[in-house]
Image (cartoon, rainbow, N blue to C red; front, side, top):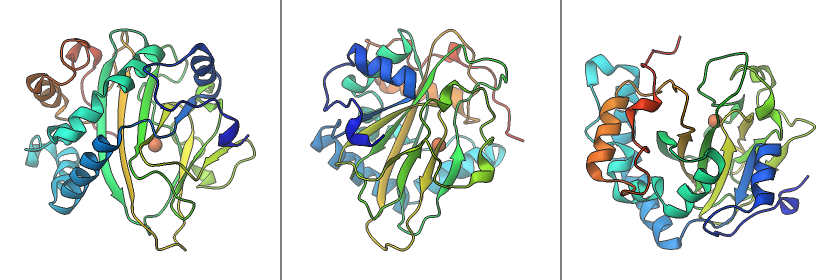
Length: 269
Ligand SMILES: [Fe+2]
C-alpha cells in the first residue's frame, strides 16, 4: 500500500465515514496540508525559540528531575501558536470524531529534528498499562510543519498493529528495519498532520546520509473519556491548570483539560 492509495483529507471540518473506518482498520490517517499556512509559520518560529533558548531542555529536565526543577516556567502551549495548534478547531473536530465527546488532552511535545538525529525504532505510545485489553482509544496528532522531504527522516507505520495487545517495546529488537506490511510516509507537504492510534507501532527512519533541512515536528495527544490515563509529566496537574487559565479551546471542549481523565503520576521504571 502506498500513501497515494489512502483516503486522505485536505482539511474538511471532520472525517467522513470512510476515513473513520480506515482509522479503525489501519490505525492511522494522513491529512496532507491540514494546517493553515499562517499557523504553520507561527508555530515554526516558536519551535525555533523553544529549541534555541533552552526551553525544550528545561522541559525535559523538569520531567527527569521534577523535585529539583518543578514545573517549567514555560510549557509548549504557553507559546501562542502551540496553544492554537493544540486546540485548532478542525483538529479537535477530527479527534472528537475518533474519540467521542468529552476527550482529554494528554501531552504535547515540540522539537526540531536535526538531519543527523538518529532514528527511533519500532514502538507504540499507548499509555494504558493493561496488557489484556484496549477498551479506550488514545490518538497522537503528529504535525509535520515543513512536511517531509524524501531526504528527511520519514515515518513508518505498521497498519493494524494497534489492535495487538503488546508492550510498547515488543518490536524494539527490529530497530527501524523495513517490515513487510509497513506503510512508509517519506513525502508530505507542509502543514501535514498524521493521526495515529497511539497503540499503532511506528518508527522514525533516519537518513543520516542527507545533510538537509531540519524536520519541524510537534505532536499532541488526546485520550478518550471514561478511563484513567497515566500522565507522562510529573507536573501534569499544573499543566492542566495553566491550560484552563489560558482558556485554551474556549467553552466548546469543557473536559479537554480536566483532571478526571488521569490517574496519579508514577515514574517510568
Ligand atoms: Fe512515537
